[in-house]
Length: 387
Image (cartoon, rainbow, N blue to C red; front, side):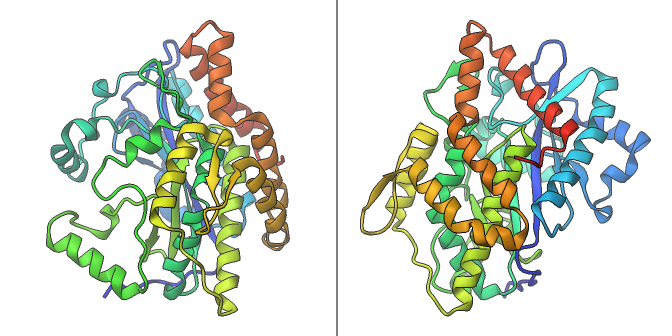
């Protein structure tokens, strides 16, 4: 039996994966351990998860992750990320390093990036080989508290229906090793190559989910439930549903909007379940196709809305969704953050911005990295909360 620790409804935490780059060349630089050592010396509270926002290492030595504490509102979570980014920048400035977040780095080669020397990472790399070495990708994850174990899997079904909306809004990885892939999110299709990563399965009961995990553990597919790396998954230890769909984003305003959408969706599903209503799971082949369409076309995608095979342009569906969620956003105190989704939609999203910056600079992808860094610095300085 896997116990589920109920959380206060719709509390949230945000995880922000950051890429370290050389301030002169904009190439990825594998200096995470050096940064962490200097943080330990000068700002050790930033490494203490018990005190709220904290910094950790990740799979690659070019990556750090800022993680919030348990927050009540989106604004609180974003302020924690902002403060963490400012504290981190004081350290990286001393070392000639910048940092940003996007689904991928536009031009650095994946095979040149060393993996952090931790047993769990090295074991995964030994198993996954070439595909594991391709995982030079960065994301934004949002945990939302769920007050009942029996709600977790239906809420995952509900979020899966809105998978393309979350991916299209966050898509920020059009470039890979110097090539325009033609996709809005290269990261989404790269990450699903890992064992147990990708779309979640549908289960009728928590016991069915426990049986699945037991099968995975018994057959050696995973050694721990945390190695189940679905794009949306329950996290029983925290009592949350974790949304892991999104590409990394350098703009705190954009992260706030994504966090608000996730929080509002989870709350809407929770209320529906409290009324005794059922959340219909979208057919798995529809979910798979929607993921591909969002990864390929971003905010220009036409998505499958329901099991009746109705289709609609994602921007129209998003606007209707935003309008429908405003009352919940008001209750949760995130109306301004949710409204910023409209700005993302009208701009075409970060993948379109990266392509525009590249085109405007004659194909210079270093300019794209500089712009991503500038977005992060601007929003960190301003607070990144107001739309």
